[in-house]
Image (cartoon, rainbow, N blue to C red; front, side):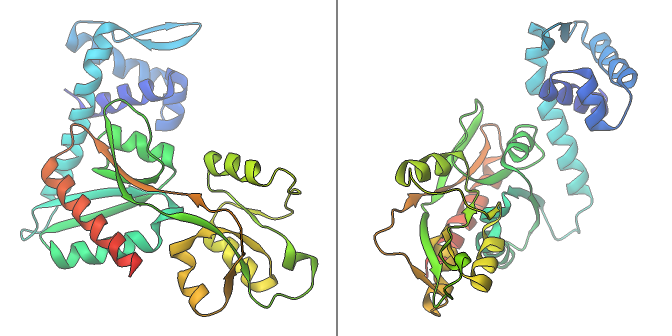
Length: 283
């Protein structure tokens, strides 16, 4: 069975239409239809029903879905494994959100390289939604996310519990910027909790989706914002930041997610490395 056709099938399932799958795969819609027809001929059953509601799986398509994921996973693993130097056993591939990558992922890479040099390592930074898709499709062994997604077939394990704390630049000038709270995007759950805690807070004139960038801005011009406690720990120690007294703290826990069908021999090493690395963050 052609791996390209299996990937095409999964893309149609993910996007819900032949047109969207064609756009994502950079091919024509005709090519998508041809690949799906080949699959249907091989399997002897229609895989999709196309109507005004979009493209939906038939009963046969639903059964084939898990096999398509396995086919793609095995193909990816085979390509990676065959290309490895003879002294390495396998590739461990993980994904991470940008906001959680520093310092956890660098610590994990160093720990894994020192502890299990027989494994090649691959790290991909992407959005939570795309990482979840890649774990489900078998393109990643695991992904590190803030928040545990509730998806059938996925297992989420707590890695560490983090707190978001309100910190401000120490010794700020008396400019308007020095008293402003920079809005940092920590997700919908944090946004809801923040507005519940500060219902009268005025809109911020500065909004940043990446914590380290917001921190650079605050250190340069003054102001305050919510940051991961572990991330700003060195800045608090050096006196560059100070915690705002009596301000609420918000939970922001990190999870490793993997498929229920993932290779446990790989996941056990990922889990071990992440827990060791998170312990290193607390030191």
